[in-house]
Length: 359
DNA sequence: AAGTCGGGGAC
DNA sequence: GTCCCAGACTT
Image 1 (cartoon, rainbow, N blue to C red):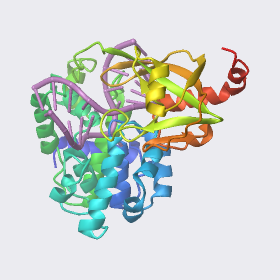
Image 2 (cartoon, rainbow, N blue to C red):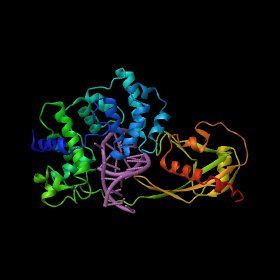
Image 3 (tube, chains in turn purple, cyan, red):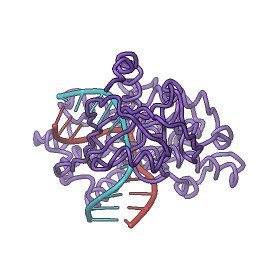
Image 4 (cartoon, chains in turn brown, orange, blue):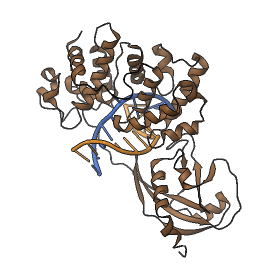
């Protein structure tokens, strides 16, 4: 057993996290769900989503039989919505090809949509006690500091080095618990001790051999992502009122907010009246312009101009992917966070707005 | 190898 | 404001 593994395992028993909702189970489905939700998402953010999701869909068959729209609504606000779509697709594959039982072979697990090398390894370890290396954000930070690996971990060359260290550092013990405790220890150390800012090196079980600690370079490792100024975009969101209902449109399955319900979006230079006539077969009357709402994505910044309008002709067109819905009900659907913010803002300002219809 | 895909926590 | 988080997928 390598030096680092023994110290991590000993540390974990005393100082690790032992009461997270997905610990204490070996149900592959529960483990799998947690690993998907935790991709690029912090533990504290995931917990309420995870518990609610498991109440609605306690097993793979129930998930595979659900409408995708229901799954997305439970995912609403969590982000990276392709995770929910892949989860659903994988559940259907497991029911169809594996009789609803989560596969046990590494190749089969990693072939499922949404499960890459690290997630497959984590499931193997926590569900089956397999000996397998993970490499998430926490582990990249711990190893890049401990072994003094320079370079942005997003680069393939750096990532390959880190994977190598992750494999080499695995414990050689043959008990299932040994591999589970070790893997949990790596993540717990990264989350609680070897943090991005001001790591608690005086409490770290690895400090005696840590290159970054020895050279006082913990603030330089791992190498930060090269900075890029995000492009700025602007757009208009329409809050179209028909009586007390608003219009939502379903977005395409691919692209930003794929498959989610959204307020109608038009370009800044586009004529709202003409657009509504063409797409919604209705005349509109402007009521109010809400202040712009800023929203930052991974790769661009979006400035949303929300415009409240009332429709003034009643040619009701039932169109695919469009629904008129009460604002309160809209909040239960699969909507992205800025849309949720806007609808809440509208609900709270409803009275004052409707008293100014002379605009 | 680089770009796409959310939202929020922590600073 | 910035950076990053139990990454995977597409091009």
